[in-house]
Amino acid sequence: MIDLRSDTVTSPTTGMLKAMTDANVGDDVFGEDPTVNAFQEKIAAMFGMEAGLFVPSGVMSNQLALKVLTNPGEEVIIDHKGHIFNYETSAASLISGVQIHPVEGTKGKLNPDLIQSAMRGGNDWEPLPSVVVVENTTNKGGGTCYSKEELARIKQKADELDLGLHLDGARIWNAIVATGIDPDFFGTVADTITVSFSKGLGAPVGSMLLSSNKNITKARRFRKMLGGGMRQVGILAAAADYAVENHFSLLKEDHRRAKELAHAINECEGLTIDLESVESNIIIFKVDNGEVDSALTQLEDQGVRMVPFGSGNIRATMHFQVTDADLKIAQKAIKHIFG
Image 1 (cartoon, rainbow, N blue to C red):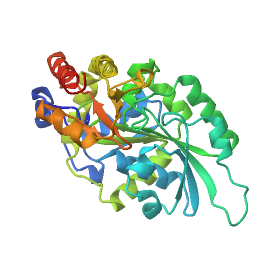
Image 2 (cartoon, helix red, strand yellow; image 1 turned 90 degrees about the vertical axis):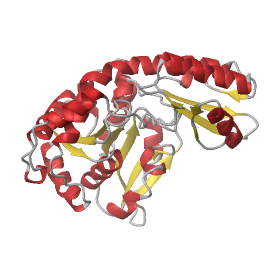
Image 3 (cartoon, rainbow, N blue to C red; image 1 turned 45 degrees about the horizontal axis):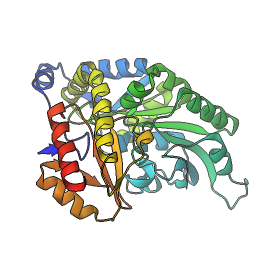
Image 4 (tube, one colour; image 1 turned 180 degrees about the vertical axis):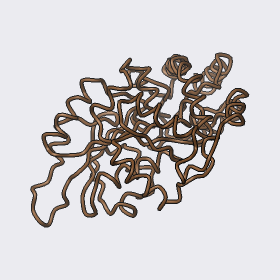
């Protein structure tokens, strides 16, 4: 079965498993795991940040970011397709006591004008906007990426309005490959950054929050409150480090295969796709007759798994364990069903 449901469905490789078993570990709640400590320093330096905090998931990292950047009763501005708004079970309201203010951008991306239009009047009866969240790449936006110039303009607007800026970079590795932006640039535009190792890179678990030493110290305490204080976590950090060192370079092939699959979809009657939106490893396409469940069943019968993605859409996501041979099978299945 060729599983294109997500880039989180990968299995650890032999090399990754060896790195995990060879990891030098200690108790991270005491701050004594040398592997995770070194890995946090490495990734923080890579992105131009002072410190990093290894956490179980991207959701926890995002929520810790909001916790350290906001106060209860404030408001978070985000694109209406953003992960925090759609896929984090309203955690921001429960954990941080903040309101999410979704605005409609383009393919999941914000711009300075949208941020300005989302600002309130400063009256006592209005929530106080305090943070802007940008997602790079955008999941529901189809894997689109922010350019360096777009992020710089958003940062300028956030500073002008005295807003914090959180970068949800669950797939930031894909964005780096697609745009050629150096990782340390992101540290110049964001107050906090989430990076994931289980999406795209193929680690079995783990994300990291990057920020200032002060924010990470606060986030570490909140991580403990949320049950995220792990013990010999170097085993997981070793897997994530292996993924950075060995799988990051493979992302360009994921992007190539995504574009090739998108072209096959574009050739089929009954399917609609915006080829220009396929910038990284995500492909979102529309089943024109709206019969998504039937389409997915037929695809699975042909040995290919994808996921429904709302409003008659299907999403396919490439990852490093999809081969060119798998790609050809997926293309053939799509053309057989829809061609």
